[in-house]
Image (cartoon, rainbow, N blue to C red; front, side, top):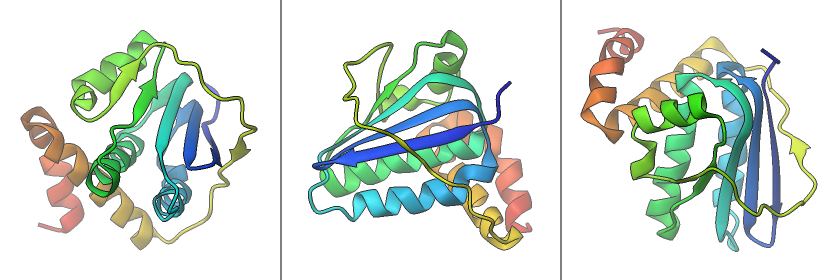
Length: 160
């Protein structure tokens, strides 16, 4: 699998995220910062997440996407779209309950705005742990299956 990268673009309140390769925990801090900047945009209107070139994605990254959807609904009453043409990735999304918080489509007419890579920033173990914990709590809130799947990990991270 190719090393993961996340690219993003935003224009006129319309945002696009593209996940490529094997997207893992190491990108979570940079992605979280981008999402905060996106939601601080007074002109925010939409966000499309392109997973058509995603080969793999870990649960922390999925949790950050779930957080994106929860915040978009809460702040803007908006449901984001995920474009996924890979049956394995789509199966993961559905098993996590993403169809309840995203519009999931196989293809979409996506603006060709130039994408810029979200650069992975080094962060402390404490910060990474916080992102992992927050991401998995968000996943647990999506459905009972996720709650069962991630409860031990969350307890462990909380030190219980």
